[in-house]
Image 1 (cartoon, helix red, strand yellow):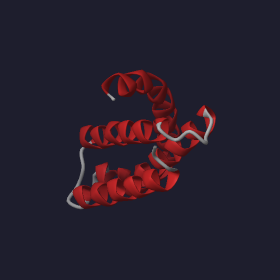
Image 2 (cartoon, helix red, strand yellow; image 1 turned 135 degrees about the vertical axis):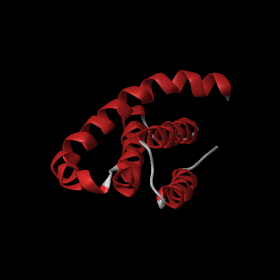
Image 3 (cartoon, helix red, strand yellow; image 1 turned 45 degrees about the vertical axis):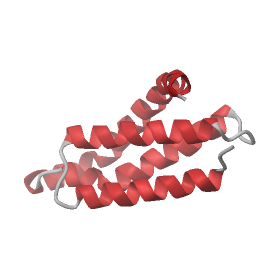
Image 4 (cartoon, rainbow, N blue to C red; image 1 turned 180 degrees about the vertical axis):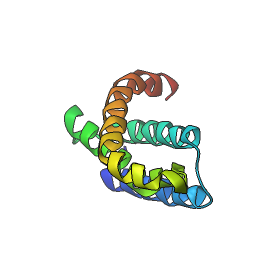
Length: 115
């Protein structure tokens, strides 16, 4: 049985690795791959946590996605478009979180089938 602390440690390690990968720049496709990998990790770990209900698990997974976005999304932005990024960042962040929320529902049966 997994615990929230185990999951938090794995997410921290994932985010550290993502920051290291992003240090030299990141494409949108690479960010998307990191996002899906993080969602799969979160779903697999949180599915094993028995003391939380579904909405609580989803909120924790979305917090991890927000942390990933806040940590590495800026590395996808070309320097020339950085002022535009600053203006649209909140909207893009909300969109990424909304997409991740929907993806969580889709990934749960896939992760359970592969477990």
